Length: 88
Image (tube, rainbow, N blue to C red; front, top):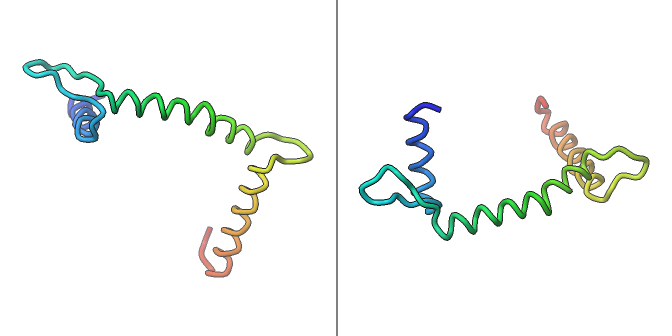
């Protein structure tokens, strides 16, 4: 990672309130909000996204409800694209 890229990422994290700079140093601390956001996003991934993706990708004769809903959404998008005569 280049120095400019690191500066960009640190600035964005700081402006979003996830980290704060320690005065008179080149170091940063994670804020309470940053820690809470990290914990929330980790739990969201483990409890919702990971099992949801597993349902979407699971093979089998009777697909789970999430996969059926995703397939219906995908089919509807295909119909809209076809009606609008857009290239998919």
